[in-house]
Image 1 (cartoon, rainbow, N blue to C red):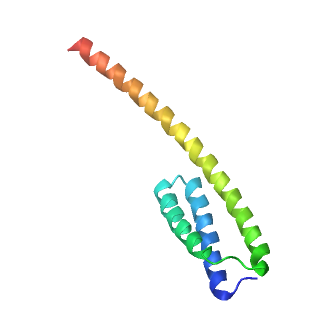
Image 2: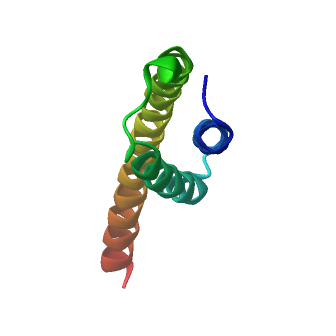
Image 3: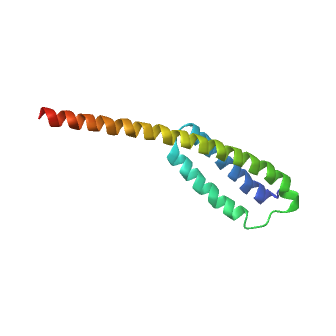
Length: 106
């Protein structure tokens, strides 16, 4: 059980995690980065004080959810990275073909 202030902080952390996950699903990478920076700061503040034994179950559940969300965010970002890499390769190939065409027609 968390006291009111710690509960508010923990809820904010969990909310930011969900916003990060939603941003990843929407490929809103700039938003995700912003949310992650906010969450990281809140986590640092939250864990400045050692959790009490009475808080352990609530924190365990939240950490488990956060870890699952982070794993999914990583999966989505890795897939986006591969997709972007493929598009960049196609663009580079197209640029090379255009350059060769212009060189031979000019």
